[in-house]
Length: 86
Image: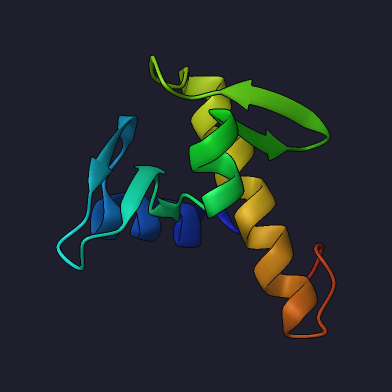
C-alpha cells in the first residue's frame, strides 16, 4: 500500500487503538477494521501471521499490522496481489 493511500485512510477512518461502534453500528478498531464475529468472540485479530489481543487496545505497531493485512486482503480480492501500487 502506498504511503499516500495509508495517510488518506487514516484521515478518513481515524486511528483508533480501542474498539468502538462505527456509525453503522459495527464494532471497529484501528483504521476502519470491522471486527468479525470470530474476532469479537476470541478477543484476537490475526495480522501478518500474529494474533493480536485487542480488548485492551492495540499498539501503534498492531494498528499498522492490521491495516497492512486488510490492504493485502483487499489487493488479493481484486486480483492485484499485495505488492501492486506500493
